[in-house]
Amino acid sequence: MSHNQILNHQEIEFKIKRIAYQIYETFIDEEEIVIAGIQGNGTIFASKIALALKTISPIKVILCDVCIDKKNPTTAITTSIPKNEYTNKGLVLVDDVLNSGTTLIYGVRHFLDVTLKKFKTAVLIDRNHKKYPIKADFKGISLSTSLLEHVQVVFNENQDSAFLE
Image 1: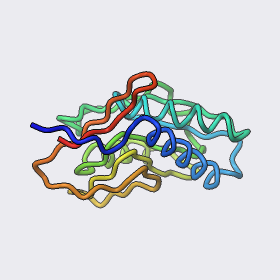
Image 2: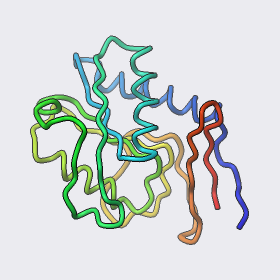
Image 3: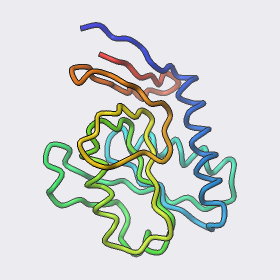
Image 4: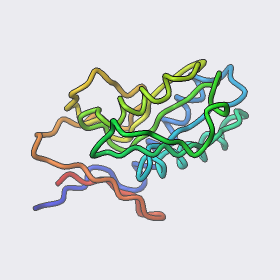
């Protein structure tokens, strides 16, 4: 199967910076926000956004790892921080690729158990093949692909890239 690079390291860096600015604009009145990454690449992408956000804004950023079983998302979801640390705060749920929307919508459902000031979603790549009514508020790129194609994001130090397979 062939690999077509759709984003190189520099392009991903630009996307991260732009998403950080969009988040800052959206949450400009907040003193602190939670950037919650879905375990795996979502967490890595979230930490990169959090780092960029810290360099451009005075907002305190709390990083959260969200553990979801992607093959069985109805099982219990856990977070690396307790509920009281994200209650009454702004929150951005982050993943690398929005494919069918299953993982993201179950992640959203988990955070709806508490009161949040504002809730947004961010993805690097939105594939436009949703089974659920979920959208990315902040996205690096939208990509129309066939259902047979696979998007893979690889995060390596100074060699981040995204491929279409």
